[in-house]
Each structure stands twice: as structure tokens, then as C-alpha cells.
Length: 325
Image (tube, rainbow, N blue to C red):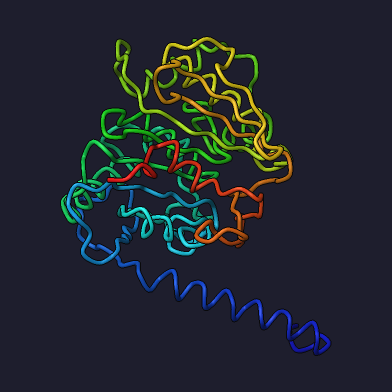
């Protein structure tokens, strides 16, 4: 098929293939695999990245890819690899395998994979223990972010292990507990259930956590493209309602502003960093927002899209990782 095309089209496709291969090589150059990290009940791969001579006591960030993506390539394209080197934190990059899910999606909806001490959630928790020890990371500054199915899994991890994470980020993800089967997950992705109360949504998290009296929860940054046809944007509103309710805030955000045409709402106390923020990006569909025009702010790739705004950089700022050591 490729060589049946006219020379200009063939050259353009070959050029794109070469660029992607070079990007993947760059991404993989600083990423290594850790094979032995525990019983691994979820049968995931553990990849890690950290710049040479990482000082002890630095943060650790878990990055979860979306369906059909590779962990290292996604970390590079989304900007997290460059940001880790710039700001000085290590990365844990769990990777899904085909045997678990044909599309290599994290199984964010399966009770056995998101329950504490079970399945994929437990595999990621085991990876974290090894990564924190490997890099002498600060256990009070462990963060998790994910895109799409990885976003759903990131939210599930925040619910299953709220004491482990200081904060999280969910890009084009789903609320915790909204589905328990693959069919339910597909239905909810396409059309979010907008009938449930804030209290019911928060109750789904408490059910996973098994700590109904818990008052301290990780902070969370939520991102959603308005043109998304894969994940109904109403899921982001439900996710914001779920976590702002957990943090004890009312439905009306404390902040509602436009930044370069992008809407940002935030919930929290005026004397503290926001507990929950929700970015709505009107120009994009299903994808992780990057700003290729800014150094170290990511570049486009499969489901990584130019939004003129770097979600990775903004999420890191929300986590206060840009404020020095």
C-alpha cells in the first residue's frame, strides 16, 4: 500500500514514520524496565525514568497511558519525561499488556482490578514501593496522573490508596465507581450518568476506600476536551463533583475563569491551594493537551493533541512541583 502511493505522499508518510521512530528511541533511551517488583497480580510491566544522580527526597510521579499507547512514548509525547528532568522528579510508568486487555487499556472499571490489594491496583502499589526505595523518593510527595482509561485508573488508585498519594491528575477520564463491567464502562464513557447526586458520587469513592469517616483526600486536577466523542465531557463534571464533595466543598466553584480561552474552575479554601480544579478545553477532542510551541511542553502523537496549553506543566504546577525542592 505504501509504495503504491505517489512519491510526495510516500515521502511524507515515510518521514512521519522516521520521526515517530526517532521519538520512540529518544523516549526509550532514558526508560528502563524493572522485572522483579512483587507478586504482580495484575500482570503489568514496570518502567521507570529518572535523571542521573537524582537527589534523595525528590517527588515521584506515576504516569498511566491510554488505550493503544506505549508507556514510554506517551510519557515523552505528553511532556512528562522532559518535565521530570527539568523539575527533578522520578517517573513510574506502568504499562498494560495485550493479554490483560486487547486494546491495552487499564481495566479501570473491574472491581478485581481497582480494589485495594487486588489486581492491577495492587501491581501499581507494589511498583510504587520499589520505585520509592530505588530513588529514595519522598513518600509524602507521590503523585499519579492518567489519560483516558489511564485516567480512570488514576482516579481509582486515588480512591483505593488515598494515604499514598498527595495529589492526582485525570485527563479525559471517568468518575470512580461509575461502571463495574466492560459494557457498563463503554456505555458510561459515551453517555455519563448525570442523575446521581454529589453525595452518591462521593459515596462510590468511600466504598472503594472502605473508610467512610475519612476526611483527608488527595487533591486532583481534572482535564477534558469539549469536542471529545470518546469520553462524554459530562464525566469530567461528575468527577469534579465527586471529589469536591469528598473535600467538603459546595457545588459552586470558588474560582471560574478563562485562561487563553480555556475554562478553569476550582474548589477549595481561599487560604490554601485548590483541592479540585477542572480545565475544559473547547478546541480539542479526545486527547492529552500539549503545547508543542513551548520547550519541554510535549509534542503531538497518538491521542496527544496540540491545545496551545501543556496539561503536564499545569498539573505539575497544581501539585506545587514547580516551586523548587
